Length: 382
Image (cartoon, rainbow, N blue to C red):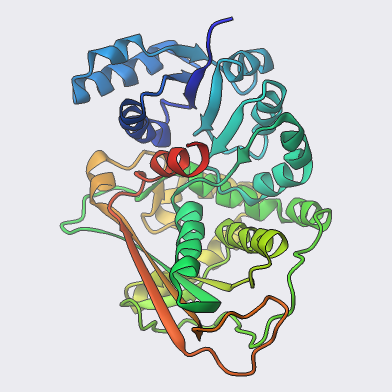
């Protein structure tokens, strides 16, 4: 049997896959890793490799293995997962068909990583495959996209650096692009499609979550609630609005793990989105209401998909973001923590004194798609 590759990127011809390929190539050279690409069509896979070879001047890229695999063909998925130690899945949406890859990775004892933020899929994998993955001795790690990783690692970082005990964390996400702004959408249509899918399958999510044991964390005091109404934050310019997403659930799960395994006091978490101008906030609220209503009906969903650019006020479209757009786009994560300086507070202890020591961490990501593979490999595998 031929030796397994260290890593295979599945879905290398998609938008995320093509950008991720550059960083996989960079990491593989630095760490002396063997790697390959996988997807449905050989000619498209060969084209993205040829383009990468032109950009980097690395002639060895011509020798990179190509594996043909289709999410609707279980045998091809099995062949793919049996050829690698770690599979990075950049395909999506995954809610309907992503489980086939998880099952195959468990069967072939292959570590699995994806960049999905689909809450239904993430929670179902957690519910149904956690124990199976443990028995197989592998990691199944979802949600390794820009948002989830930077939120979660940012909170862990500020917990580690805080000179005492952290009580609460507010996270602020600011998305923008440098001027002059190029034309076209910020993001690919798959993210928009995932949002529609999540909204119309809320009942399914509730059923899944009802089967998962509730967070085993203590009642904390002083309790800090999320701000319901928009407000002007001190850490950034613009307006902040509460943002509930799968990122929040990922962070809570990490805090639960730290409490159960290391008896570390859980941090109360609140996530916010920064909108630069008041009219941005107005359009955000209006588009959210329109989106929520139209997504309930089949005809409305068709309109949302067909005219995504207009309903999202230019954020999403059926055509991909241009290279110039990706290069000029940036995300800024600001994490503001509050706690008690020079105090070690046990998880079960309630402190009557209000936390007064602030600690702030600011991270700017220069492009919207640069993070996943750099973090995935260094954080999870090595």
